[in-house]
Length: 101
Image (cartoon, rainbow, N blue to C red):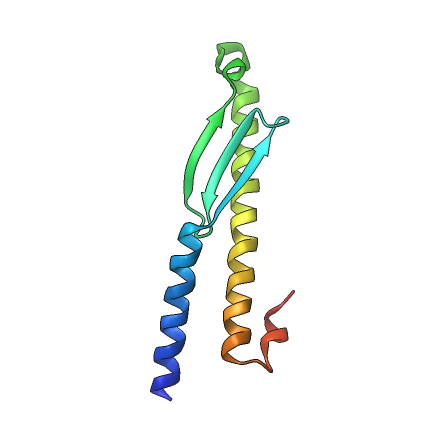
């Protein structure tokens, strides 16, 4: 029993390391704002089109940052769920379908 728990923890740790190296991007405003996240949902980079940096575009920039960040985090969540499902199905092949959507 403890061997299986140790193996499960090791697999979860391996998935976390793998997710660290996966990059996803959320964008908004036809690419005027891009937010990159890794699979662990850590924001890595934010790119902003220079036209949005003008003071009169402050509200638009704020709105686009929220949208792009939420999209990046949702994409990271999707990748994370997919990797966890793959891990669970490899640990318990007959039960893998229970963890899907």
